[in-house]
Length: 177
Image (tube, rainbow, N blue to C red):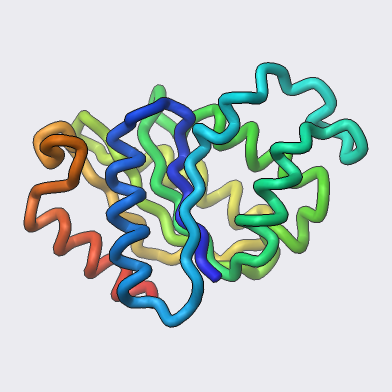
């Protein structure tokens, strides 16, 4: 199974548009099950109370881990640039997941990274930061990390419309599969 993670909890984000396109294209190419997880699912959690103890951790985190992370062999992270890195909600989620069944969640699984930015760098620093964390957890991070820059001009009516970018997404997935 592969899980595509839209790595922001911001509703109606550009990241979600890109992540959904990755999801659609991967479903076409993969013979395995593909699931989509948006970190907007964490918006109902208002406080991190108990996140560092397995017995007091929020049930929503355990449920997402059980459904989307534990059975996955591959994880695709589509992450926006927030302040020169990736969103804090993603770090929070990774930290929370590492408390309960860390090895089963991350160890020796494969990760593919895509960075989204309205600026020019396509979240290159954020993908570097994220890849270091994932490798620390024992994941294999694919060497082709795809930065998407100036994404506002690539989206129209809530969909990824730019033909060249759509082709790049397909090639990114194809090179990974």
